[in-house]
Image 1 (cartoon, rainbow, N blue to C red):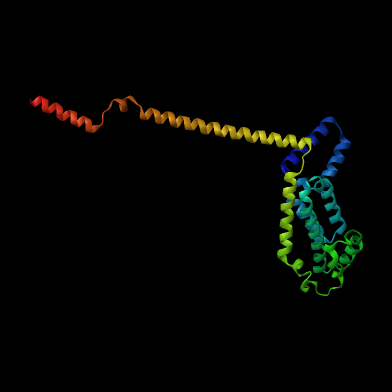
Image 2: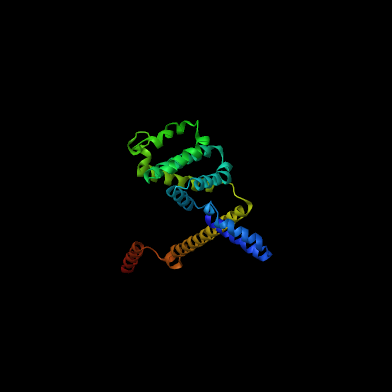
Length: 240
């Protein structure tokens, strides 16, 4: 989908230039630079979210996820909502353990100050409110798992896979649908042409085999054994 989006973006840009909509074009280019969906590229979105987590940018992390939620996730079928919710929970926990690991205690405090109205009462967060007061959370049974490299890397892989599936199943606008249909038609035409070439080659082989099997020389020539027999018979009759 990323290639299709880039192609359609170029079409829109060319059209705005053609029509002389300069101010609209400038706004469009600004929006392109600030595109939080990274042209629907899952790897780029994961890279962006990971960057916000490493930098302790809570507000930017929240804004980016909220944008993805409103623009993409909420348009999906209900079956996707639970995985999306779990991924959001995992990202915020990853944010907290990263802040703890990098000595950003102020960022941990800021998280609970800003997020408490949103997460208070949620059972998934019940044990996490004590995190700022735990001296060595890496060794605490509640938090130990989240400080492991395996969990953190698995989270990022799961996030990339989730985004890829979401983008593949998200409803497309008319322009993107047109581009997708055009690409599909092109692929079908190329496949049909390949099949036609294969069929022509098979027909040629069949014709060549048929000619070799039923050539006049082959059809009129008797087996060597029969020729030898007739030769013996002819010799015996001549001797008589």
